[in-house]
Image (tube, rainbow, N blue to C red; front, side):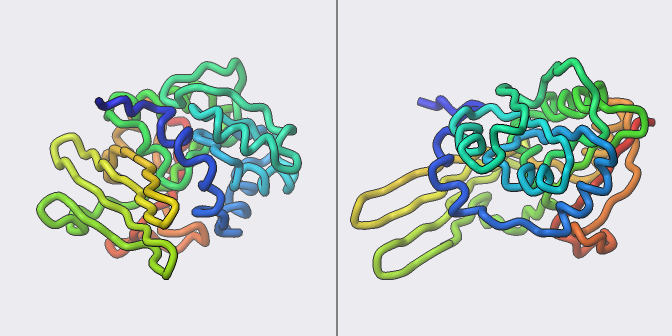
Length: 242
């Protein structure tokens, strides 16, 4: 039975998330700090706070929204985690009653919204919550269907005497959805961490922004502001009110 919803990924992976994704690019904090100005800032899909907490330490008043209580509990248990105002819910549709100089969604988290309609709604929600002169920043990968053979792929992520872990994925070109499992095999048994996403090309995101009254202000190929080009594997896109 398919019971996957907006909470599933975070609720299942929260216990090991920081072990898998503990690091961050310091240039990301520098750029977000610059764009936040006097703040406040809002992170969509804040998770365990690996970006929000370093930004908070730089003096930015960061708020966060996430669908997973398990992920938010991990954030709140960290030093200064209780200083960040948190909202639980689907970041496709939110009404927080205030405006932000920076709203951002990073690490491909926008693609956790599984339909085009939800992704458009996210842009619209962000647009409604931007202060005059504020910006909406998206970090996402550039889709590469060539990664898939017969619409599927498998990649070993770790192998040693005690553990085998791999990612198995299937790709639907019609819905632009990828269904994956992070699989961990050890003597203790098998652990499964499902993830679904709906990817979009940068040009499609730009159209979503236009529908929400936003325009592309800048696009880079990295947090250090490398030019975006045909060889870029991800993009940092900054939108402002049109």
